[in-house]
Image: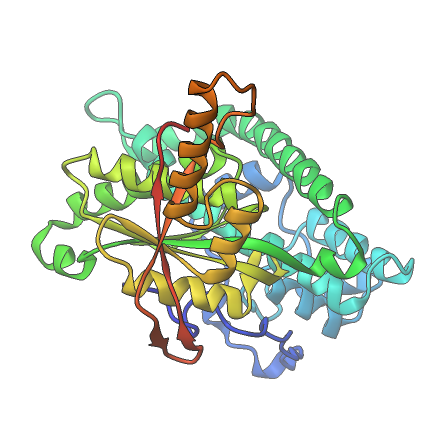
Length: 390
């Protein structure tokens, strides 16, 4: 399955910020009322470090923020409408004050503050779900007969919470430092938003058929192994994993050589694993719009389309990517050129002429048949391969 424009960040324009208005109190859907389960409340108090004290209206008033803006912040963070139930804490009030304070001080515009809330909420929501589904669930298996999971959960969370919190902040600071470094190295202000990047999709072939044949647990293990291997390889070789979509990953790199190495390493790793289906990769190079950690634009669309037409266990790239590899000396303009350079160098060596050795190219490029690509016209893909050792 290759992601199309409606389901990935492959659209030509980033999504516009929706205009969200607070639901009048009498129209709120109260199906989102907080739970009254005693253990759930105890765990909530442990994790939040505070008791329920405020209704949404009281929290907004205490923070000095309008109910309309408070509702927009909370929804951006992914929190459900709870009517006027008393379910909020001092931490909720403080969060509102901080966001509103950044707007009042002129450090962030109101739409940008809402984007901060949304990006943080979406990222941490996925992290929290994973930790509960895969991590905490396994650790809370009762160690002794007769014990219940609920009896194990509270002390375990109490021990893990401060450690996980410190680790989360550490990783966030590291990632923030890396992202900031990339931005300040941009050539100009415009490049900070619209940058020239190599963007690649890696897609498992025949994944839909696998979903019919494998048990749910086996399928989950396969997807996890694919995502883990991909994430590790992308990070180790200097790329950035934009997102994973089950049978597909989207990655980006600042230069074509890095993206080429990642793509070929992915193919090599998957072909060595007999449990994995075939993989295909498509990469394009060009201007990319970045927003909320995602990438958008024609370059992303083209990479997605190239993936859909790539042969099994192969990498297809666009003309701009091929030109960039040639420009940087990572690939020859043609195999004929590489052979001629090697022949000249060998002749001079035999004649005792001191000269520079023939260039050692890391990658080879083979032009493929031009073909029409939906929504993008006619493109000439190139087949990427490794030449010699890297």
